[in-house]
Amino acid sequence: MFDAHPPEQEVLSSLLKPLLEDFQYWFGRSRTLLEEQTIDFLGSEAQAALLEKIKQAEQEVRTSELLLNATDGQAGVETGVLMNWHRLVSECWQVAIRYRLESSPQQN
Image 1 (cartoon, one colour):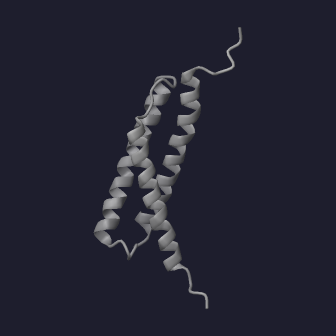
Image 2 (cartoon, rainbow, N blue to C red):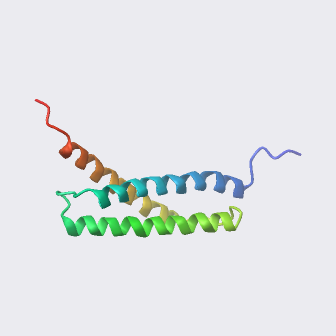
Image 3 (cartoon, one colour):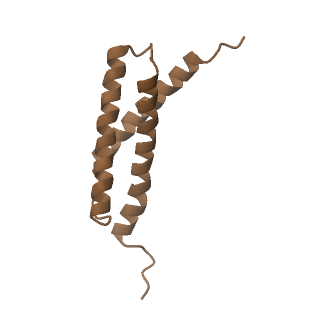
């Protein structure tokens, strides 16, 4: 009999792989912004601290990708870890939005 539902492993892999790729993308963009620009409203210490959090998260995501691939999709990531990455991405988005708004020429 044909099983209409893919095995749990395939579902996990099909959801987790693109999610990890998205985290890598957004962390990479944020790292580039923080490495190449001075974000005045953050201050140098806060900017450096955020950059370090991003670098740490990038390494964690890379490790998760390696484990997922090495175990043929059997390894997962705890929800709490995913939520921490999501919060960090959200923080990065807020910084980028504010930076772009403050950097854009004022229109009168």
